Length: 409
Ligand code: SAM
Ligand code: TMP
Ligand code: ZN
Image (cartoon, rainbow, N blue to C red; front, side, top):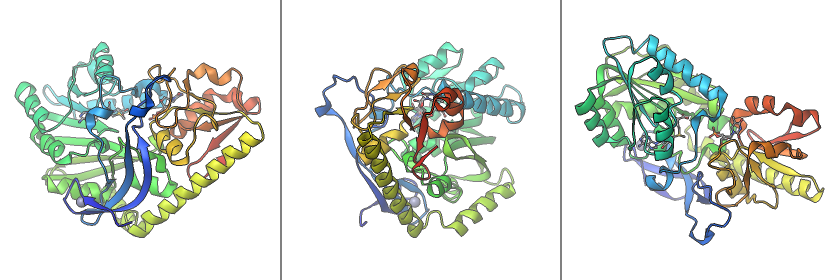
């Protein structure tokens, strides 16, 4: 590939390594009778920065197209994630939020899945959430929410109104934000010298090693690694002081940044950076090999679905994830191959999936009657979903997985 762009972190040259082609907005679930001639598409392609190793999209989608009043993703839909964030809130309360009148700011608090426990503990907090619908849901839980995009200006306003923060936290949000200079300038202004900036996002190392290519879509602008985050932090007077690998969402890393020189980095930081270098996770050859594996998965999945259709089998999908937009649009999977997708999110039900327009139905539709095969789009919640849907298996149903390769289980 010869396409280049400028790195949104360091200004270096970003070299393209994979082109997913024309893709819709991953969370644009439209009514079935919408005017699809107006559907928004962009070119989804990924590149790696020659300067700082940051993997990023070649093209940016305007943020208001993705995050607005009707943003349909509700974080609290997963019991595993509710538990995950409650544990973290408790950890913050016991460690970083023990001083006099502590203050935590969450960037992208969504429906309040993490801040709920903080609010219940009576600790001063603020969620910054641009998507009006989910921000309103958080407010109903007694959480203080500011319905705005976090950026440099917002950070300044928060400092003036409420002072600086002991913890700034973001989950599955920082990687959504291309305008990183504004964010990190804002973070450094808002953070106390003794404070920490903690964020967790899908990990490049897991994406490459598991070929979880569906982690790449409009909202996931950056695919972070310890190496690229370390370089990014140092440009803004921050330092990467801890990393923690997480199993959630198919493999993530929780990064802890502190003002440079304030905290001693844990041994895990150097160990993960060394492992990344040894494995060459951001090397052009590794990323090109990843691209070749993506094409094989595409071909295998389409061949399997066409074979099942030819045999007259019923196939439905499970979980109308944002991730699945990349799969359905890369593979050309529409209602002729997958009858419908069931999903627990009311805002997605009765609508159709972006780009290839598969109907989305409520979770109960899955069993009415059970299909022969279920394509698990929400593979990151496999354990939770397979346990909940044990009866499907008991009655002879089979799951289709496509990460790290196409398999029937
Ligand atoms: N933190 C939740 C979680 O982990 O489940 C929500 C993650 S959701 C995938 C990403 C959230 O980031 C959305 O609710 C979106 O509205 C929000 N977001 C996007 N850009 C933002 C910005 N500049 N400042 C604050 N939130 C933002
Ligand atoms: P996520 O992979 O971005 O977290 O999205 C998961 C999607 O799957 C979301 O639309 C909710 C849906 N879902 C179900 O339908 N049933 C479930 O049991 C779980 C955990 C998720
Ligand atoms: Zn760069």
